Length: 91
Image (cartoon, rainbow, N blue to C red):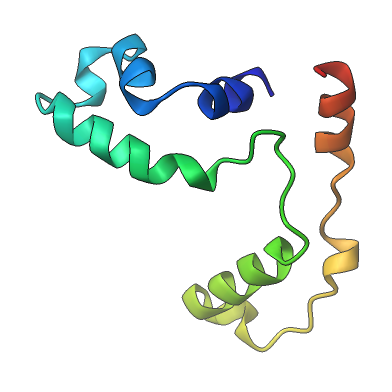
């Protein structure tokens, strides 16, 4: 939770400056650009949008034939319980 909040409250240059140099493999500007473009995918509170589980299932079904034709009940496989507990513990 602390890391997600840090990402949400700092810019890519600041985050990159705190990372080891081998993270950007000699091209810090490219690393900062990629980091800036990727930052919106991180939720500041760890919560997944309500459409998230079904989107993940669609993607996995495309990638893994062994689940493609399976009936998967997402209400039995996904819970936000852990992220809710973390948000209470680290407000």
